[in-house]
Length: 118
Image 1: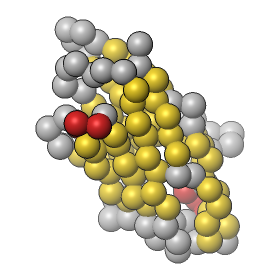
Image 2: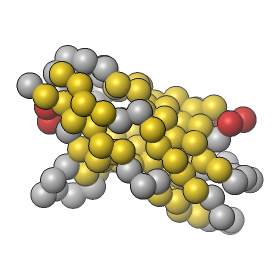
Image 3: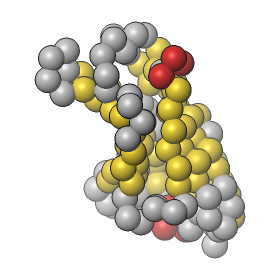
Image 4: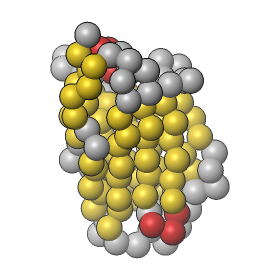
């Protein structure tokens, strides 16, 4: 069993920066995709950014150029550097790690609140 623990959320003014961190405890034996999703009040959960074991990343259009995802495979760690934050980035941010196919799994973190004030 794998658990994901997020940290780094908080309150920041518009234009500011935050860095989210997610550490996976337990072993991830296979290649996988780690990512960040977010859910604002009254809205569906949406993808923010993902990154594969090989380092291929993908971003939502709304965060391209502002957010950067990275990972440390040796530490089972994924980071999300968020710059130029906007009030519309306010949401609960969730970490996720998935693998499809052989040895498949899908784990979610408990979420961390990010609030951007105008």
